[in-house]
Amino acid sequence: MGVRVTGLDQVDELPDATVVVRFGYLIYDDFSFSILSEFAINGRYGLSVSYGVGVTAAALVKKRRLPHSVYRATSAGILRQAGREVVATDDKHALIMYSTEPTVEDWVQLDGILSKALQNPYANSRGRRRSR
Image 1 (cartoon, rainbow, N blue to C red):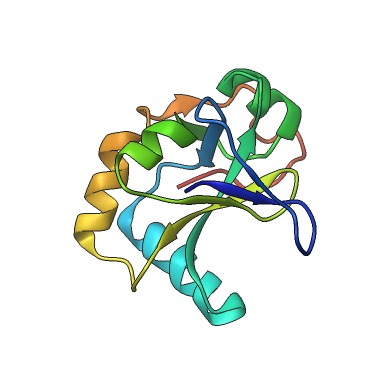
Image 2: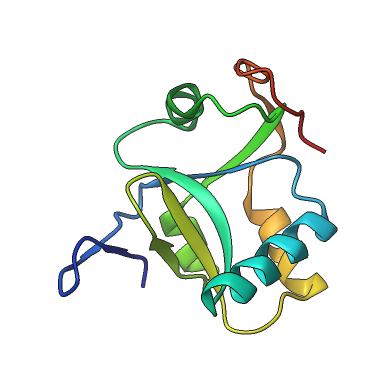
C-alpha cells in the first residue's frame, strides 16, 4: 500500500519501519485545510508529512530543521495497519492518503495513531513561525 514513486514507471514500497513525522499539533482545522489544499492543487486528498527510511523520528527532525515548535510521529507500517496509504512525493515528503474530503473521524483516527506532541529542539532555528 505505501509506495514511493522513484520514476515514471518504477514504484518502490516504503518499508513498514519508515518514520513518518507531521510537524505541529495537528488541530482539526489545520488537518482539514492541508488535505483540501492538496486536493485543490494536485487533485488528491492527502496530508503532507516528512518521512525517513532507516532513521529515528528525532534524527529526521534534526535533519529537516523545520521551525515548528512540536512534531508528532508514527511509522508507515502503523498507518497501513489503520488502513492508510503512505505515498512518497519526493525524497523528503509523503502524503497520508484519504479517499474523500477529510472528516472529524479521519482526524480522530490519525490523532490516535500519531505520538503525543514532542518538543522540536530545532524550532525557530531559521527564525520562522512557531506551530499552532
